[in-house]
Amino acid sequence: MPVESIRRINRAEAPWHARTAYQRVVHLLEGLAESDWSRPTDCSGWDVWTMAAHLAGATAFCASMSEARRQVFAGRRLVKGTGRPLIDGINDLQIRERAGRTPPELLQELRLTLPKAVHRRATYPRILRPVSISDPVVGSIRLGELMDVIYTRDAWMHRVDLARATEQPLELTSDHDGRVVADVVRDWADRHSRPFRLELDGPAGGSYASGVDGEGHSLDAVEFCRILSGRGTGSGLLGTRVLF
Image (cartoon, rainbow, N blue to C red; front, side, top):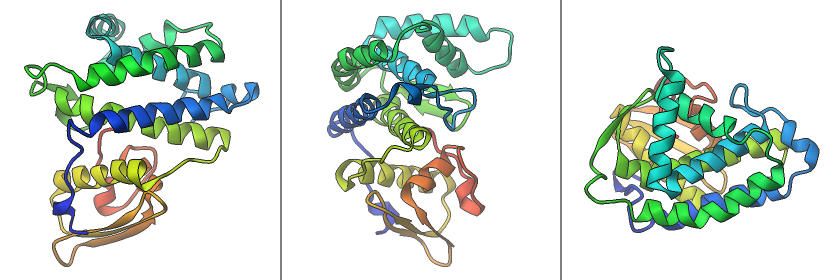
């Protein structure tokens, strides 16, 4: 498939993908044994419980503009003078504020907040959507893309993290996971603007190309996304980071 023919995930389809990503995270967490919650994940310093606490906090962030503002201000205070990015402060806040909560309590928060987060992201004010914010990975990003795409990618990638940590099967379908991966491919291609050939294996995979005489890469679709997120390493154009 020519990469130029891939349309980015738009505002109309974004809510379905957000809801599906959140629901699959909850479904995976519901199937874990008590001992699974202390297993380490691919995110340094985070075990399964910590990642679930972050996801609960991030979902709460998306569910309410006032809660989002509160987390931003409190997170900024946590990293003030440290040189760390704001996102680190927000993540730390989300985890600290849920210290002591049990896995069932985190799951209940996710279940209750999920519909509100999907609705709030879908109805994010038009006047704010073009506003750009700074990101330490990709430079700048519009709030509209953050709401439509990136928060869904975050939940999607953390589900991958959780499945790897707990050795659970990863549910992958072409309509959701394949669409998320294709959107990542287009984003990645736009960022490096170089010719390439890409063969991604698995239910979320596909064949993509741009231009002629470009680099060729063949790998699993999920691993491709892990590499672009910084969780793995890749040569050549696979070194181009994409925000998750």
